[in-house]
Length: 240
Ligand SMILES: [Zn+2]
Image (cartoon, rainbow, N blue to C red; front, side, top):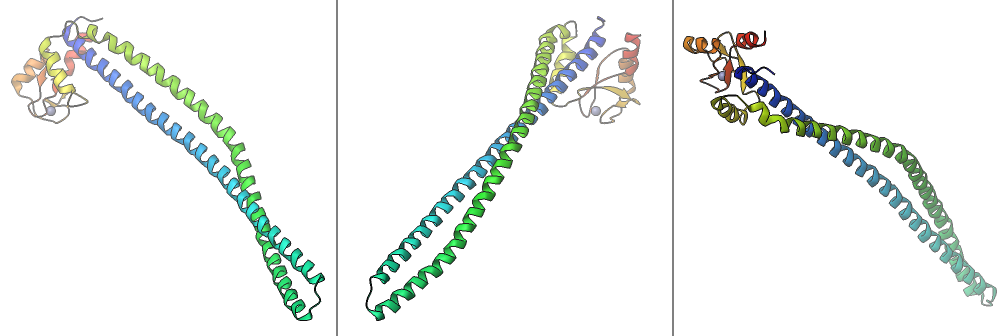
């Protein structure tokens, strides 16, 4: 490792950016994991809804069949009544009642058939959902596993880098570290190269005097945005 403070400092900045980018990747993965969980919940909810529809359709069928049975029963009773009747006047009345019941039976038959058809549809929909769900869940779990592994690897890498941080800071002037720490809390690019004698971010001109210092390896602070600036040729000088 190069022991020149300037290069150590530039290395530290790059090192911290690496940690920052790993942490951002972790956040992005966290979002993906949350979205995958949400998707899993949605599949479960859809399946439950399909099950509920079958249950409620079954209840409708049962209720309508019960109604049908009660009409059949009524018809039977009226017919029995009719058979034992001698009075013609009553006979016509009961016959009309039976016809009324028979009319209701025809209508009820339609209602029962309709309820059965709805139940069959609900059962088919549930079956299809259950089949799809097996495939969807297996894909989802595979993805969840992958994301979890990626996250764990990133986490390890972050921890490994953070553990090296103190070592990376060694031999760097305290004044630089203090200014850097302050700026780092405020912006994502606290240290930038000087570009055409100006701050590489906000383009604030740098005084001739500061340019001379920068060319000798000093770290300059931008008067406008307070970022730490360095002359790129210094980096080249120390690395070559
Ligand atoms: Zn600036």
